[in-house]
Image (cartoon, rainbow, N blue to C red; front, side):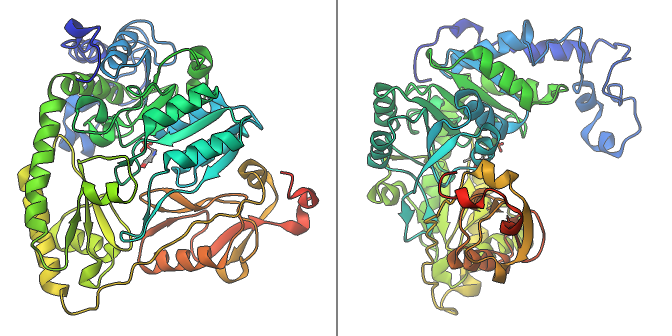
Length: 500
Ligand SMILES: Cc1ncc(COP(=O)(O)O)c(C=O)c1O
């Protein structure tokens, strides 16, 4: 474990899970919610999952703690979490890092306060702008031409943005990007702090960083003020369970707590909370060794994959040569475009024909997210699937040309103003030069192609069509080739466009 271990002797404990377990075994008479009464309901899911899952799904206003105002076992578990991550304080989330990012931005930035952020942020950060009214200063990410993906932001771009926006309240750093790339987080944070900016991080894909020196630096180790980590993505807690961590004096813990409480259910899942508790214990004692193991397995897999005709596993050196500072070696990016098929096709065929679920696809690549639970057998299955794809396609089609989608967004008005303006739906063909009033993205990765307030260009429409044709899941308000735009005829503020 990187850093000081102040509660070293306590990490064997799982205060919330232990209490929940004894509650589940106590044969309590439940006249509280949930209505399944700890598994006394007839339910086909119960047949598969077993009664114990239902027994652990307890509310227990008396007996367990309250997530909105933790005072006993949740408080103790959160203290251990903070300690394991080198933070001053930890907050448990049952709404994923999505809730964490929105709460972080809303508790730091008020309406009209500026926040410097990459344009390839997750949709939750854009939603936070709509909710808070903060003004984004977007910086465009580095485009990886060979892989056809948007990646990190260089230190120089952050420094420029800070120098040109001295009045900005905060900066936002993705650590790492969906594809595993990080930037010079240390130096950027030091510079931002020198200039009196608050640093908010998105570590949806970085919760495991803290537990191995073979991985990039974690936000807390680099003294970020606040970060959100999806333990469910890379450390093995249940889906939706995440944490917010804070360090130092720049974040007001009371405002943060009340903002988190605005966004979360008043009936948080005890299963999710317990899974965070046991996940922290496991990570504290075993993640280091297991991360080394998965990185070694990945290296062995890459040696085999790179002998398959038309397939290339991308290694750390590629990203460093493209200006990245560091790279998360538990990500496995595989380029398939030399086979003459898109990543989308490979993604679909691996699932449809070989029962292999990849994390995501882009035009040229597919991505596997490996974790401490990945086995060699899982990697062998992937290698088998890739061999089959190579046998089917190599040498038959011409390799695909790299297709670069330059975001180059043209922001006309703030997302919040666009969101509240009168709107209408138009067909793609009529949307050119209109202002978007919705966010559209493919999922995964959930990074918006267009956000409310941006101009809809030919390039955007072309890309949406391509994604639809490739069968990607395009998330937008209305199905079909429709975009929600501001209805200029009904909008009273249209003359102010350049000011808002
Ligand atoms: C970069 C990034 N940030 C934030 C999130 C949201 O995390 P969660 O799924 O825990 O809500 C995601 C989810 O995919 C993501 O990719």
